[in-house]
Length: 369
Image 1 (cartoon, rainbow, N blue to C red):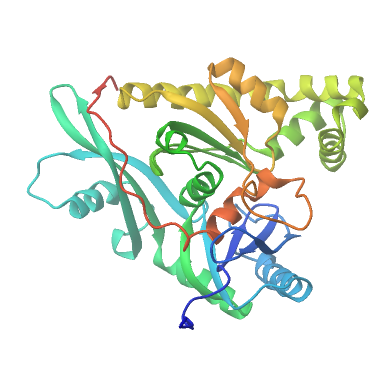
Image 2 (image 1 turned 180 degrees about the horizontal axis):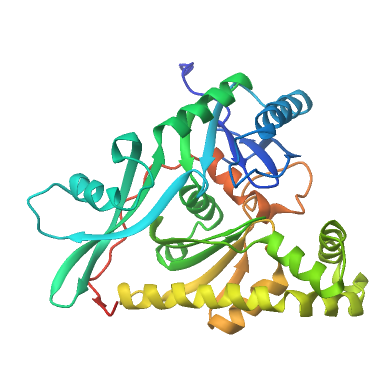
């Protein structure tokens, strides 16, 4: 006789990404195979980069109320994604042999980099592997730190919006989960992938292998910089430039105005070149730090991801490049046209679906830095 498991939930937590331009919410079936609800609302510009201050607090609560009223989100449980606006993310090297424990070593190194006392921080770390620097071995560690007061403020804000924050997620982890859900083959997961998520205000770059982060870096390059470049080049208002760029990007290739498209590409070329230069430096850092496992592909996600940019990055980095499709194995009633923009929110909704993976196998490298 079958026995009902009353403790098992039918739906995932609501994955929530609060970004520079708006908030995204996604809820999936518990096994991650079906889309249950999703929605996005615009938010006012962030003041001094703080996504949860000023007028944004009221606007965020109103946006969540609106999304929950118009969509069929189930329950109150939410996974909220933290990014570089709330986090300090650092790759650190600590001695392989020390009288101190690894957490103590990490905190000692981190204390010099935090803009506030270490006692006010919540700190987590991921051990990446061992690297050789000269004749000594070090442990490469990725550290995430957030001010406790900031986390409490975010939890309180979502509580006012009627949601219970069951977990705080970090953006790179959400991106890796989205990748694991999209790429199912063992060889894809084991290979080293350069993930590039281009948002409105900045880009997160990470290298992952076997579901484990090896390198994380945030770049101050995003859609806003592309819009500003077009506005200056064509002597337009910023809003008009953004509309022009989106309008051309949303059209099928056969319906694009070639003259306008040429002007947009010419205007954004310096920003694209700067982005590719930064990606090339990340690739070089990875190659001299972790030998024996070369990068196999680039996965481009975020609201600024498109096939044209992926092709250009592929040519310049000499790597295969794909545009992320986070809903590839998730059934939805209608096609989702801006799917790459949802990779972070989908990854947050998948938090309970994927257990924390084991660290990727790495070999000591001769580091030249």
